[in-house]
Image: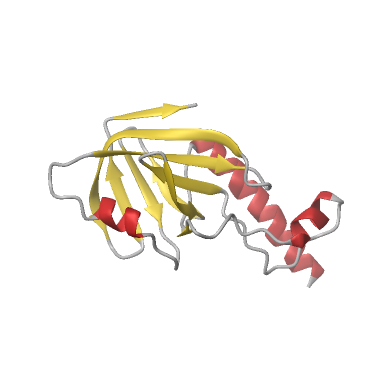
Length: 148
């Protein structure tokens, strides 16, 4: 059991490092829920291991400078496309962005969060429009990305 938890934590750390290095983002949860952390997260800071059921959403999606969803996973980022993977909780604001009429474009941002929910880095996507949606994955095409 401990070996399995340690392996999960190691894989989560390696995955996070790879995602940050490649600029890849992750899935979703509702904006009404803060980043899902529990008391066991503070236990991780003291060196003990967190239970396997701890959920942390390390990315936040902003549309019109308003937090709309916490993201937990994204497939990839290229020079002009990004694919967000949505979770079980869906925001109406992201649904509206997905259902934009053809030709309309909108700006949105994704913030990388630390374990306390504080922003570490922001990726802003300009003139984005959805080009593919399959119920879970939504791919946006954009004209410019700004990393700050």
